[in-house]
Image (tube, rainbow, N blue to C red):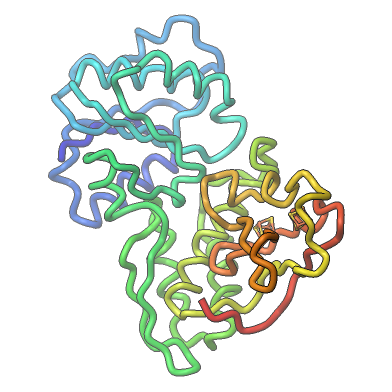
Length: 302
Ligand code: SF4
Ligand code: SF4
């Protein structure tokens, strides 16, 4: 697969270095680096199109903020690429209107906007899926015996944070691994914004932490904390399913909260929360009008 990269700033550089460190150098057929201080609004972006472009299968736009991302469809057209990834790391970087404009200006290019980059998973598009096999939502293999003895990164965040976190998990007590992973992510120069993204009701930094926590939970086979619905109190006929509508993980495409048939009365559905993907942000707790949800600390087998 041939990848053409549009990069800006330290974050773009970090992603490129991480791809190279993981053996993707021969896949990178070209790269254009942009200054970070480009104007937010650009009338004529044609002057930013790279002069020399090589044929490519996938366009990766990393670290570019605002209107400059409008060059992606044109770069895709000129390189022949039919796939592009534009990760979103903050609300200011990619307003929804701009995202829509980019999609509409490239109807024959599959463009995905993972929010954040470490939430990327295969989408049924060959070049994007090939990339997402190696980079995106973290997947770990953990060997442990009360304490973590070995951690392997099966799929890592494109910025390299998963490798850093994996090293820091060695010797950690199993029950503390989720929290340790979050602290390690906070120590890493993660580019995800700490500004609340109003589309998902949470920050991209928090979303990034939910992804690494999920990787730890799945590798260990259990979660230590989760939002839990009281089936006696939950009554979807008396609410607007606010929990589902406001869960940030649901809003980036996960099935963290779903309505499930009540085991006792199959005619009734109740909200159910997946402890693997719950980041315990507490948003659903505040939104549920019937106070049917609480955070519990327990050993939740996955
Ligand atoms: S948990 Fe609350 S908001 Fe969600 S379906 Fe049940 S009653 Fe409605
Ligand atoms: S606490 Fe509630 S809103 Fe937050 S991630 Fe978990 S299920 Fe979703």
